[in-house]
Length: 333
Length: 284
Image (cartoon, rainbow over all chains, first blue to last red; front, side):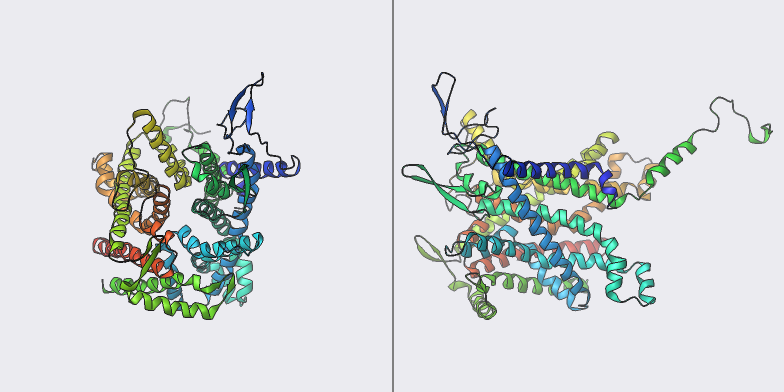
């Protein structure tokens, strides 16, 4: 299945989009030196003043600009690597720790229903609100450094998802354990660890990969929600807009930060909110393409195409030009 | 039947314990350091304050007020939004699904192929597009569809429910499309066809009831997803609902009791659904 995914158009579309975005973001960082054009006032050729920041989307500023004149398109490109990076790392940790949790749960037996019942509780509350409720008071403490806050936030986002994901992975493992080849391996005296890695893992990998992509989507959505609620990675920096008007700006241009900072200007400069949300939507769409491709690759068996062709050949009518004759009347030889 | 009641009671108690455990998490951290004994103390404190709900206070700039009775109106408002949107989404989803299946095979196959796209629209996008639309509509026609600044006793229903309905409709539509396709391949559909029933009758009388069950099996996920939607809608439209209420009062006791009260009707809904399913199909 893993080899099949490269032939799956849905997966490829999503993958190319994400890879392209990341590559552009890194190119912007290292080759273009993270340069973001800033202009407060625009003049036409004759030098007369035509507009001042924030600019609307135009050929010069594709996505418009913020109040200090920074080009939103390049801000989004520059922030993409951080947002995607957090989503990748966060969901990787979620899956890795949940995998360990799933293996531990295999040994629980009857207490499993208790664990499942308790972890169900998080299905009755909005995820973003729970994270906000836990992180809100701690993020507000000023004595912590930027990196401490980032790590703590990541930790909370990862840990809260682990109980439910562990149970999901445990159920997947149990499904595979019911297969006959696992019973055979057990009867032949393979020890549990060897069975897990030699016999179960090859079947579990594709499912873990699919879960990983789905977790990336979940983390991205959570980040967007947290950004709106005012909690975001990437830090804030206060820049002086004019002599006496300090404005908060996102330090790293991370998308959730852009959203949270610009949200208050929704009616003044709607594009400042719209484009970050649209980028989130585009990236989530790309990941959905990937997960759909993975699902399809899991459903198609290798070599199915060949079989189809052969079938078609056989379906052709026996005789196209001859007229109808009964079989017993047909002259043979 | 007794099995369902016993099992539901069991998971009810466990979920309540789970919610209280989650609600006490802020006690776990002193700054960023983890402290287990503080957590136990906080948990006990939380339970005692939950047992005396009339003593709960919430703090605003204006002073402190008791949580109850004022809480009930906020609570019922949010619940109305949530469940109204859910049922409207269900009806719309069914209508669209029937409509798509009555279309020519080629078109409906295409729609089914790309139905996963429905899942990738973030709720934020819907809410923000709605706000643009309201502003644009106001500029064009001078009719304000939604009062952006609402007061405590003023409740609007139309726009928030509309925002909340869009995504669940698409979600339910996708579930219906996938399951109806499976269901249409079953033998009883062929029997019905051979008896001369037309396509709509088969869909309506036989396929739809069977697939609605699968929607019900997914309804916990749908409602969970809608809770996140509700948070965004309430926050972005400045509605005084239950989620914004919790957001503004970060008190563990208020968080826990609101979550418990939000949990009860959702749980009742699932349990009633389970009993109904059992009566209907004999399926636990």
